[in-house]
Image (spheres, helix red, strand yellow):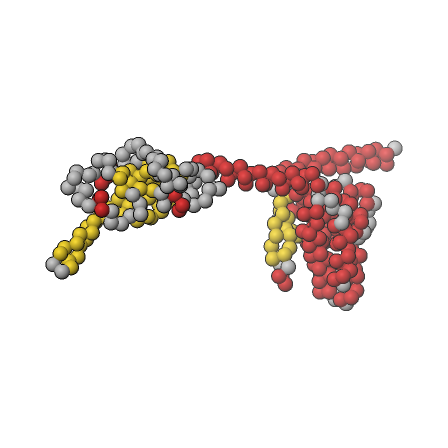
Amino acid sequence: MNHTIFEWTQTACAHIRFKPDRAPVGAELTNHYIDCRDCLIRGGMARQQAERVALEALGDPDETGRLLNKMHKPYLGWFWVFSRWAVTLTTFLFLMGVFRYPVKDAIQYYFYGWPTFFGAEEKGVDLTSLKPFYNGENQEREWFRVYGVCTQTAQAGDYTVSVERAVRWQSWYEEEGTRHIYDGFRFILKAEADSLTLDGPDAILNYLSLRDNMGNEYVNR
Amino acid sequence: MKFDKSLLSGSTTMLVLSLLRSGEKYGYEMISQLALRSDDAFQLKEGTLYPILHGLERDKCVEAYEKEASGGRIRRYYRITPKGRKVLAEQTEQWRQFSGTVERVLGERCQA
């Protein structure tokens, strides 16, 4: 039975030139056949006879297929498929433009124990003046200077980096009567880019250091 | 009473839309209801129904959606759209004018 209805739908759907529509149309016609067959069985007809009658009721598969093909024009079908893709792509690009998608937002990165930082406050260093700068991937001292205060940013390749927040802390321990002071700070670094095709900004972090308002440089180690 | 198929062919779209006016239906349900309402006078073939339904869907006179039927099968249901209702009203009006005119002509011939 299944083979027969399968053949019928295969023959009918082969006339539909827009191939993506063949499977759903075939499924609909098969369902129609099952509905008809089951109805006849419920009405008291023997299963085998009901199957034959239901199949005959479907009519000529070639004639049905030709009529269905007229309703499933390939150019209309493909136009519909491409339109949906175009709308999706346009919407995506529009949203990208509106929101300037941040690739990796608020990356936490830590700097520890810089000797030059020790006693910075006593020297009049304003921690809020800390600015990141970038010395290039070749580690040569090619500085990328930063302008502005608090919203200070540096351009590191395709990324814009900025210090979102900095916290200074001091700790100490005593050993053999000598107090050892550990002085440092942490900050949250933000890296943004407009393109989704870039790699993550992790690589540039190796080359980032800080400079304060006194001109002191704190090199990342 | 069986009718000449050509009499039916011009009005099948209108009949299909009128079946959907009372609620959403699937293909076999439409054929069954049409046969029932017409005392088996109109027996729409599947080969006629589905091309009409798919054409109406393409023209946005009906919209289709899938729903699970008993036994886990997925049935495709059709429902009439506002545009479909408008087309149905136009076709019904045309049909009434046409049948009235035919009646008038036939009446004149009988009198003659």
